[in-house]
Length: 234
Image (cartoon, rainbow, N blue to C red; front, side, top):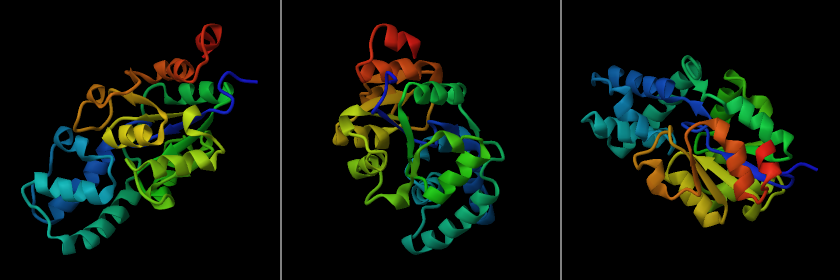
């Protein structure tokens, strides 16, 4: 029996597991360039990631001084997806310590899933491209749940897929969407300090804020009741 048997650790993807900003913003900037609009600096557009491609497109065009009429979004979305799939991991890489943390959590008995506002097919493609696809028991994207984060039904769809409970779940994320889903579902919340968010992660009220994935296994152990030597082993 592991110290985290029966636990579910649910991960956001963009800005939490994988630093995808260069390729996502690169795709946004390709659309802007095709429209004759100046590209956005990575640092400026980075916080717009996390609510799906449509939001990124709409927010990005507004920030570039060219807000979109609603009827233009579907065609731009299709162009975004086609370009992004072709460049999904040109520069995207897992954040430092991710693989080791996932392996430690699995060894302790936890079930791992991805709960992301990214579309499931894009999520699966990205995880495969960066070598993380073998670590998760389920990948629940925006299209695989009744509503997307911060709606708790997204998180609970992921938890239910693994036979877990909210009380024994930790949501690991970077932004308000993750915080909202965890709080509404009654799950524990760990936020990373290095992700994509318009509101600083520490202001979103996480149970624990981590600055490196090396800190995650012990954080999960603390929240889920493993203590003392058990937490130290994680």
